[in-house]
Amino acid sequence: MNNASAKIEYQTIREESRGATAEVTRHSVAALKLFFGIPKTLQVVGKDNDTYKGQLEKFWERFLGITTEEGTLTIKLIEGRFFVNESLCKITRKTPALDEGIARWQELGIGGIEIRYAPESDILARFFEALTKTTSANTVGTLDTETAIEQLRKLLLDNDVYGLRVFSSDEVAKDSNPIEQRRLQMRRQARTVFFKSLRALNETTSNTFSGRETQLRETSNVVRSMVDQVIEDDSALIEMTAIKDFDDYTFAHSVNVCIYSLSIGVRLNFDRNRLSQLGFAALFHDIGKVKLPAEVVKKPGIFTESDWVHMRNHPTIGAKSLLTTFAIDSQMIRAALVAFEHHINLDNTGYPKRTKDRELNLFTRIITVADTFDALTSGRIYITDPIPPVEVLRKMMYRMRNKFDHLILKIFINNVGLFPAGSLTLLSNSQIAIVEKNNPKTPAAPVVRVIGDKFGLKDTVTIVDLSSPENSGITIKRFLDPKETNIDVKRYIYQDIPLAN
Ligand SMILES: [Fe+2]
Ligand SMILES: [Fe+2]
Image 1 (cartoon, rainbow, N blue to C red):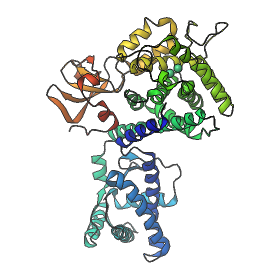
Image 2 (image 1 turned 180 degrees about the vertical axis):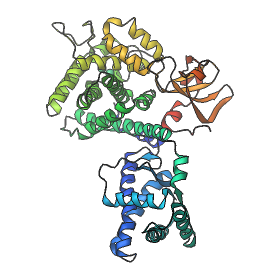
Image 3 (image 1 turned 30 degrees about the vertical axis):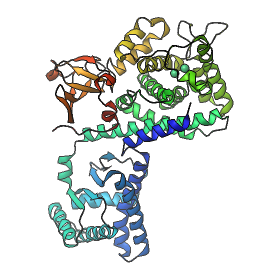
Image 4 (image 1 turned 90 degrees about the vertical axis):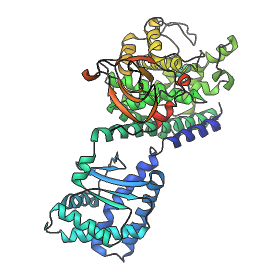
């Protein structure tokens, strides 16, 4: 396995999903706190004070951090919650300045602000001064909100504050579709957590490879973020698993198995702690492959007997490697058990060789379903061509029926649907669509994003719920292989194409 090239590939793809980085989130919260702290300081100490100037400078740095990535900084206040560049800003610890800021905006009727890249820093200073003047003018609530906003806008104009717009709360409310904002936010989060877990896994397994002690904090954090997201809605993460053309698929496979396993765990009502343990075990189920010869792991064709000798060793190597490299706790023991058992089928066929039959652990039964589904749909392991998901599910249900726990398999099928999120499909009305979300009650009729038709691809997408009565005439005709159609599915998964009006 070539870790250096894998790293570069992940970084490149990560850059494709701009705006989804953890750094941006960190900048957002810090920027928000500073943004609302500055007027408070200004009111108390005046504009020549060093503390005020220092805060202004710090905000400027954060502002640049965000706008060099995204072009603008928008802060919106919707129903008491802040959205920075349309993403909900989760603030774990509110500051008094933030509370006062919310109150001030509500008094003045401000719903949002947009600052474009990149006015000079003194424009921001003039904005804060104008805001403070308007606030003072309104201290006894003498201005109605319409007048207050107008007064602020006039002050901004008079003071040459350009590149900056103030929205009233009515304008923000009219303009905001919270459901759409949440959808986009979940998609951004899914990209962030997916690529973060690839990196964490890459780093942790690299250390394992050289036998060094490793801190697993980053991996555990990433699994916890995945758990949070899967509990709310797993479709954006499942959509990420649709990309199968990584040069080195080993890590992406493990992340995919983790996502599928967590989505089963949620349906089994596992609590957060159990879900984290399940996700952790899934992420490391194939860790033994790191010590196999790369040419065997990455071999695209049929295995020879000698390849199989190597391959059959990876569960034992994996279990040993987990138990000898990391500190042993209950999470690690479960992960080692899964690594050892994940190629043993429910009917006790499979490998490694055992002296007697064993009853498989529940985690193993979940991870085996996820593992087989991803291996067969990606076509990387043991076979040469990927099989469409619907056929894989059929094969797992019937031809391979003795190998899996049927209840778990049914839960999985119910959850991912016959056309999992991210599948490229042809609709009966000749439109081309990417599946956005499964409808568990109608697994053949998911929610899709229509991206084009027989005349070509469009610049915008339309979301169509195939299960709703008004779309009853439209069905999915078939799964399309992205390679055959020459459609860059990644573009539609790693980016947010605007909705058609
Ligand atoms: Fe494996
Ligand atoms: Fe695997």
